Length: 357
Figure 1 (spheres, rainbow, N blue to C red):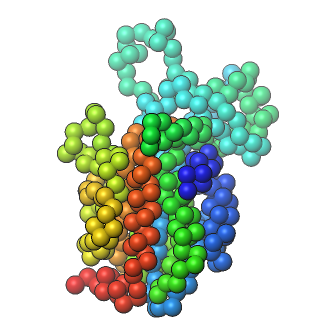
Figure 2: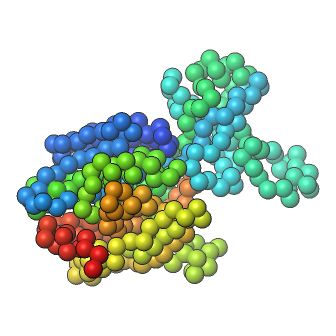
Figure 3: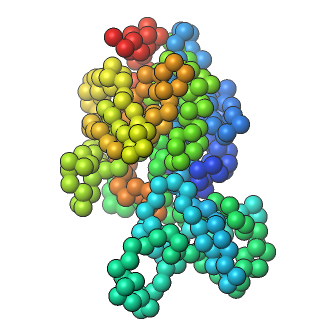
């Protein structure tokens, strides 16, 4: 699972431009699942038929936050806009990859040098329009001759680095960690007999509104869903009442989340209790939270006639940056918790878990 995670984070796939990641995930799933399909949006579904009448969908997202080429300056500098929720401060002097049809071009995000800044410059908040990408071109014509065009996706440059005993730094841990668990789950289930049909889904465009997950949920209409994703964890600058999750303390079972635009989820209490019971019986550490954000659960649980949904989430620091931080035991514990949960279910139990009262 560690090796597939490394390959996943090194593969570019900004929201709406996940083709390379889709190819990698589908290739890996086909090693263990005979029925793997890709819809017109790019969502991947691996279907494992079971003997019972009920069904479960496990959903991750394959995209990552990034940028898009907005303007090519006559001097050869590239200006960009955001593709996903990003803080402009994470860009300073950061290496990025521009993913053109003709190939991948590395560049660095530039900002006015401190030596040239006035006191007024230092007081002014940084805006994305103040930043540019330097790809080493002499002029705009040279940039275009390489095949770089307006609208091309941009992602952070791969930088997978283990540090300490259990920690990994990388771009796009959100949510390639979930994708690695999805593939690992398919491998572990290849010789298992299930009493229900299991859909292993990798959705596109989560970072720009959980669009792909909505399409998958509407198409499959599973009886219940489990979302695997990464979520923001505490750091020294954030008071605990704002972020209760901690890296290294186990997967997160969430009760509710809601973003400023109202998008979010009230998670199924019955399914959450079942997941917690499984964690306790198997000695798997876990955490609980609510948070002001959203995941793919937000569009899954309202699809069709409604789909009871829960999530098993992995805490990570420095979210949506070129250097997200995660603890490897949290990934392993999330994978194990998901596996035990799936193994110990049957169709009759799913029927009971998905009843509101």
